[in-house]
Image (cartoon, rainbow over all chains, first blue to last red):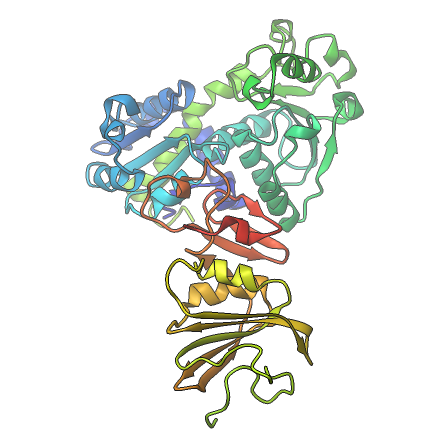
Length: 308
Length: 164
């Protein structure tokens, strides 16, 4: 049984398909799995704020009949007293059957995995990785445009966007043409480029969405954050170029889907919500069955050995 | 191997004229790429304040390298982690262990697959730069290092990122 899901590179094509197949079964008949994790305790260790990821892991655990213990916010926990991450997770390892970790620093999940025996899931490490978001992104993509023979555009903050890093890495296991659209200052970081290069993928970069929009089967939009720029005006000028609205999408294929890991601020105008392109809320809902599938494969007794 | 003068055993570019003094017990790092001697000292954490007896030769004529640097440190043996990092900045170096003025062990450095504990990660948000009980560790790439924790790629002068 796989014990750790730290980066998307940990997930082979077979792993991904296994999770997505299981998620589809669960979505079809959620009642059939409502005691799969009876007696199991999942620890949520969120060292930075999260709404969707935290709530969807909690919901997923409850819907499988398991229980959740929650560290609370860092301010109200031992972390505020200066305890190391290594010590915190070592202690939690003795309480719970699995650990879900969100941390503001890159590499936190890799480090934590060295100190625990329980299965550990990276729920986001700084600007590093976010593999469970990627699983739900892939689930959404597979159920709309498919995962082989498709062209995907990824737009926004590619440098610091952990969802982008994990998605781009995971897509190399499928027959996907990837295009990356961003300001030059926010292009993919060297580590992700190396992974893509090692996987034999071509990194096609653009500063302008128009250059590729009409070719895309899916457009994955991420938020460009104010703090990546020295001042407000530089931010406004750049961010404005990577916003889409219903008019932008007139140049896209009718069946192109628009995805977003959420939260969005204004990079996707509300008028896109009512178009057939918008799948980002469905994408967010998929977080529950996908995380149920992952927890089921990692924890349920009868899954031992299947998940590899 | 018999006892031989330390420095360049078997080559003509020995430090004849005693450009660099012989040492009694310690380590001679020879065939350091010219210009890298001070960086070798930085890797070893030697800044002159620790009281170590150190001799440095810079731009010494060498048959093999044209010019080379030589570093001799009295009373010190190098850890494998130190040798690994030296291999990255001085790939042609030889590390000679000296006892009683003689070379008792001579080895070429080889480029390792990973280095741990000597270089720190330059990414301030990397978990290894927090107060955690781990050493930064890097995969060695053809043209740099990659942090095993945060994936940051270090290119250029790795001696700018030596651990404290």
